[in-house]
Length: 617
Image (tube, rainbow, N blue to C red; front, side, top):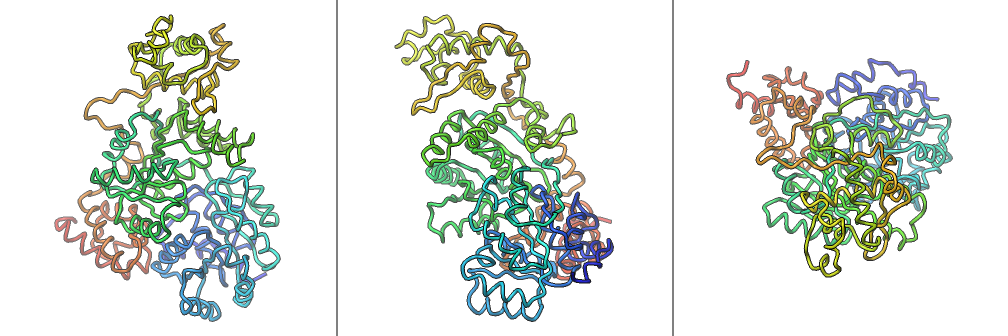
């Protein structure tokens, strides 16, 4: 084994962290993950998005001699990470199909001459067809270790399985003397076992961080007037970056067009767009020429933009894993962000039909859908529900960062009485009608669909006439999620009673723990409460100065042809606007300002701070 493994000292890692990234402390499990590399021991590392996962293999690459090989799934992701590294003074490069012949030759020469400490490659380039020549080149380069990023892609049990990742198991045979390390933000115990098996890891250390993202505010609403609901979110995040996920390309195009007409800098993204258009739209978002991307789930893995302040799902995804991964693209910088799920029970019916059509509807996929439906209709702390799904105990009594803990939901008194009224109505109509019709009857609507069938004569007609139809629909959907009602998968789905539902009609004691809730009716001109994280992150920050620093960052980024977050994250700019350093020496005290950036960019930011705050001490 390479003798430089013994260089694992706290000062080596701490010095690299501070010099190149401007950090003076480790995040949870980072030090342990780095030590695994420095001691040549295989590892599986699961850290949440924004938890400093990339640093776990980047910092050791500077402490341990040799070349670190990083396997990454998308070219855009590689480029952003390499741009960030080189901007920090770290010798790094990528080798992929986007490079021209002369660029490939230059990188190859750099590898032979030992000029790089990290090389980013795709799985196809490393072990795919025609990859033998590249591996042969690497074998001459004193490779110290291989890091497999987005490692969940190797598992068929993961949420984003990619067949080309399966070939990475050959790495053990191709590079037998080096350690392998797998990194992901989301992986259940089953996925972790599959990663170990597929990569052929030897006695790996397994490091699993908390799945909780305390900076994210989770909200769930029954989808009603979608455009009105979207405008409410956008009003809270004016001119901020956001992603809106839709389940169909048609909806993506329609919503993106409507947002542009409404004055929002929005662009569509889905697989139906031409490759060059899709690439241009993605770049516009990364470079802050667009604020909102309306997308199918094809958008996201290659997005490293750290200041996404909101993610909206305009329909429920197919699993909690998918939801955590997609919503987790918000707030990667650790600052506050909002994650809103707008759902309907029809979403889950659509998924079942789609999965069945594709031959993918199995007991496992049905369970994943039920789990997602249960989350959507649950009443309780969203953070507790999400981390509990991944097997983690949630210790806080109040997250102060979800609709429930921010007191935006109102639990209903006598939920069992309300449930029995709804169940009775479903029984009275012979279990032959859908959610909308049952809601209209309960609310006492005298529309043609109700009166034409004589349903205004039912004893359940008008039982809930003091409630809005949308509210009653929400209760019906909660009862479906609780298992007292079922919605069929037919073209025109109807609501039927389940065995527990029938039992509840007979005996009210069968729902002792039933909780139903509604969204509190908004008070005019009152915005939702701010989360604890948001209040703390803005404390003592000069907001005007922060915006001027953002403008300076954007100008520098455009002059260099890189996304703004490659220059500095928002966390660093807020810290500058809080501390107001008045010299390059003082700028070193700001978290996220390393030596190279202080040297190359420090004077410009200090000048802006002094110009904006001439009277500051």
